Image (cartoon, rainbow, N blue to C red):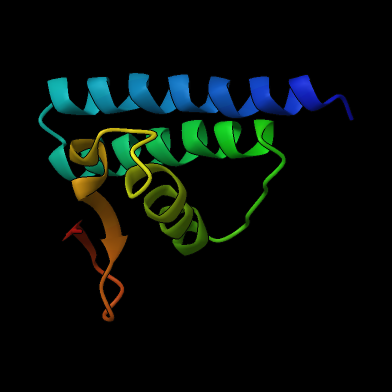
Length: 98
């Protein structure tokens, strides 16, 4: 499959997630808005990683790469990596401060 098609696919999914988050926020479905916002981040960052020749299946791996290769090296501002959404040991979504 064409590499650019895969990148475009992930970016389109991110745009859909942003639209869902906006709709959920407007309708006061806050938990859904947070979830959609997280997936927008995950899909857009996955597109960037794929563009750079990296590919991961687990969200935990993507978050780790975000911090190791982007936040800690200064490629993106630390404020963008300070809070990410993750899962606690009980499986509940939570904000994780780094």
